[in-house]
Length: 239
Image (cartoon, rainbow, N blue to C red; front, side, top):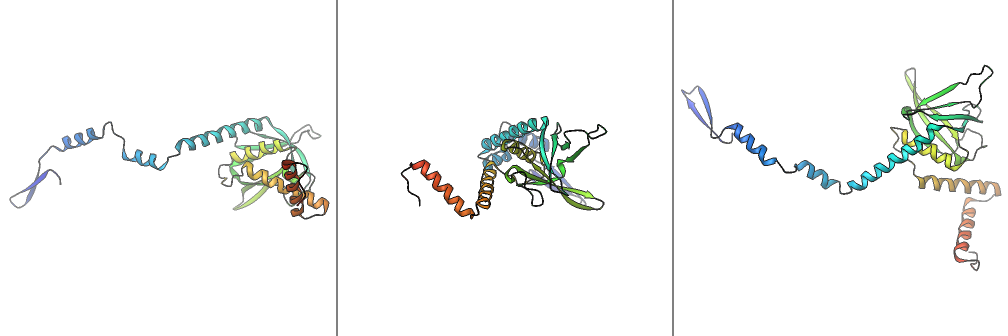
């Protein structure tokens, strides 16, 4: 032990004598740390050189989430694909105030004058897929559709259920797709604006190719040639 010496008395008991009062030693150590940064803080700052950029990104995500949530609280008429027939049915979708559940009802009431309301807990959602599901009708463009995959407990087992939704335009799709994506707590496969833009272009090219009986590569080539002509002028010759 530092600052202490041992002396034996009668060979049966050991007496420890401190050269300095232990309380004084602790007070001196406490004074030496006053006004100085702790080593832990210096290590954290050294590992996060872009902490301001990270804070800006987090703040940006929070603002986008609140903007989408405000619009989804107002509600909108979307197409809900029937899981049995695959037909799109108009439903009034809305997200509650805290963004925990999504619910939908029929725009009109039934014969009894009652509107049935169904809802899903977004905490049970696993992920979102962009595009139209395979088992639904193609009455709505595939680039205006997305699906929410839920994991629910039925009895003693867990099953996945899908909620396929179609939108009326691209702005409505981005509002609900990115808005719901920001509300899913366990979702780690976030889709970006660039991803949606590229996937939408591929879906449109596939539709044009199917309609004209061409391969998608030919459609892409025609699009690139047209873009080059617009950039270089009308004197550009076809490749």
